[in-house]
Length: 262
Image (cartoon, one colour):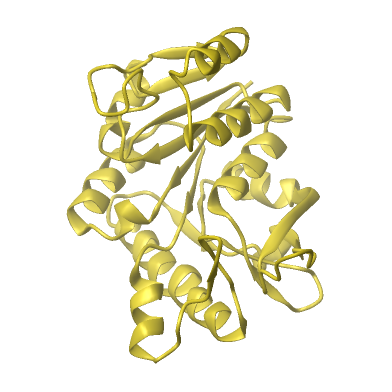
């Protein structure tokens, strides 16, 4: 089974040109078929502010109203996506920028209104990913670069969580490839002490996740990250890595971040 690497980067990389340059150098050198999923960074917030559009937050979560959707689509699927594509082309990586609407690549549904109306936020449907499309692109030497914009199949664009997109893509393609999912963020990986970068936990298996939680070694925002990662593994992803975007070059040496596996 051929290996596939699905990598997700967040806004902290995109917002720093030096970090982005270093990351893309490493990404371009990743061997074999690969896919990149990116968030949007602070550019959308700055543009909204410049245009006098105030961000609406409920319980710390951004509401995507009509005007916000227009801005995040312009920034995420436009400026950020095409900048990354151009920079990868300069590194001899044949990148192809996509939103979920392009080629009907990723289908979502507008999040149902319960106590909070999140606006034009998309949740992924089962079998959301167009596996034949992505397989054809990969086999023809393209590297898909996904922004976090999807669609509902009825003409409506939707703002969707980039972590979820990366996971769904890796799960879907695990039927054809031995897929690895890589989440890049600002820490070296899962740490025993969140304030000590030298306390990296190199590997976590399913059966010792509960023990780490009970001891309080894993807590707060890392818990949902790890549960989502192991959910991907249980659905067919071979392994998941969590680590610092600036150390992606260590991935092929088996020394990148924390490896999660069965």
